[in-house]
Length: 125
Image 1: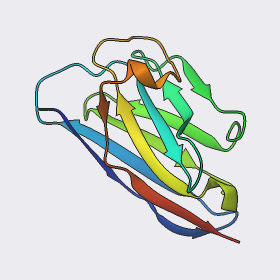
Image 2: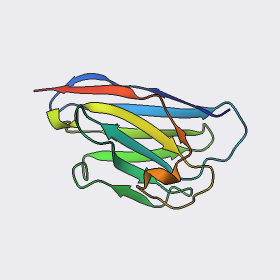
Image 3: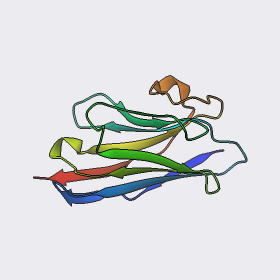
């Protein structure tokens, strides 16, 4: 059974930075597309960033473009989300997602078979 373990969330002041990580383990599989989603209280889950199997293609939500960077380290089966210039509206539970079959960068949640448990990111004003 595949497991995704997230780390790096926490409390930060507006304008600060955080990096969240997600390591995939538990069974032998090749991670294809990877992504980060977030869900704030009272809102629907949204994709904030996605990265292709090769790492050459990335997608970002307009709300985080220029502030967030997604990257991956396939040797460690890990995906990262570097978050800079954080705003209070970035406060949410952040979830990583991994596809075992889809190669391209996509923000479509149905593509992802595996999900992490979520890590809380809180940005104070």
